[in-house]
Image 1 (cartoon, rainbow, N blue to C red):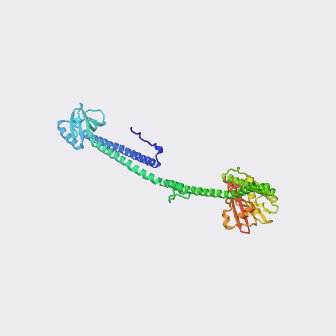
Image 2 (image 1 turned 45 degrees about the vertical axis):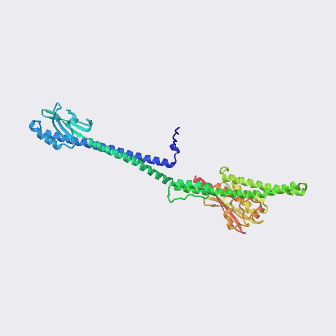
Image 3 (image 1 turned 45 degrees about the horizontal axis):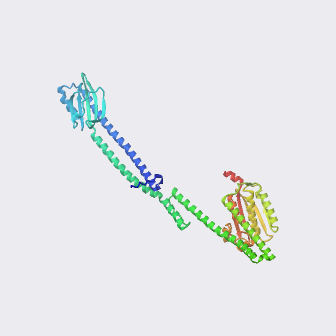
Length: 476
């Protein structure tokens, strides 16, 4: 049994073959249209030329008869025949008919008279077609001289003309077939050249799958759309690789942070299970330690949830703080209640009339994180100052402490998740290494900036700059 032929829909063909077919088809159609127009033009021009020459020949003969006022007597026949032989052309028949259509004079140059039957006319006519199987151009014109009414016939063979046009058509067909082959090869080369960068991208993607995210596409010097696409692909892969690295680091840091309190709680519960539940002192101590570690876990989870919501953009709509100095003073009073030993000073007159593009809740959260760090890592009774000022089109806040400071090599990393400069001292203070990361992402959420300046054992200054309301209105 014969197997049915497998056909592939055009839309499912590889793009290389589709480009080849379309480019070849387009080039062939253009070439065929050009040749068709050229062929028709040449054919019509050559035919028109033959008709014009026949008309000129007819006028010349008519003028001769009218000037001589020929009566077609026997003594004039020889002279007329001689003239007609002189003006006759190759492959042409000249014939003079009387009123009844009988030939009086016939001059032929390779055209048999029997190919065309004589026919008298009363008006000039011009015909082109097949006569006795031969392609002929026949022109007839009436001739009236005194009492003589006759007809002059010019029969011109157009066989050579049609053979020439047939040869031209044959050459054009051969050239058309050649054009199909050449355009197909050209389309294939063009498709291969155009798709080479895309194939390189596909190869890079396969390498990413097997070798890792560090693979990149080699970018050429061409400043075209495909080169731009390759650059965007490399930038995307840089972001993906960075995201995976951050995710891996996040998992490692989170597991490390969770492991310690879980291990402590597990140890106390195991001790209670073995023998401590009968000892009230040990039971109280274990329960207190477990509650403390669970509170630590709860705070860590809450901070992680806040950080996740900020990174995913799932926060409330933008708001405007129209009285930032009052909001900040309220926060400072709350911090004084929370940390009675802290000395908080403020200089906020420069932003009294400003309006900041941020919600009150998020402004409070950023300041609480920064002030909490400043108080925790500063000596008791050390002065912590908060200064507000306008910087061009931004409202800036500076929180300065006199604490232990941050080493220079740690400054670029302190805003990463779970990063702590001194893990031992940070553990004593109860931090999780997420506060600055949350503050940074909240600030960036409102198109602001946050930066740190610090000297070890001298203090740290954190600067937060947020957009002013009038600048946002101008941008809109």
